[in-house]
Image (tube, rainbow, N blue to C red):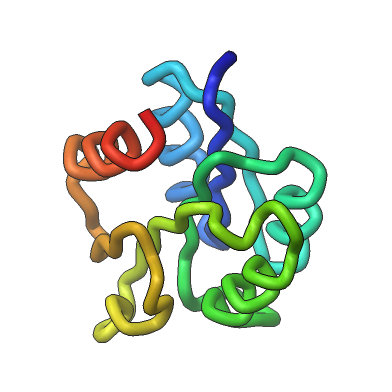
Length: 117
């Protein structure tokens, strides 16, 4: 069974790039353009890993993470923060990893493989 990854990113170009990149490496990928959609997709698909942008319209990535930790069975889901904001490494304290935009694709794939296989 393929591992499931949810990409939460408001920039549609970056989101589509991430979806294509991750799909091309054998994962099932779901996507969301904002925090509310991300929460709905998380509950619907129960992903094995989430990539999370920090700054999105209408809400803030760390708030998503706070909500995630309250959902039974999902609170330990690994999150990779991908952001262009300075200091984003501290935004989600228990993130599996934190990458700066622009990110290195091989580094992201290595983190995913190391985190969920």
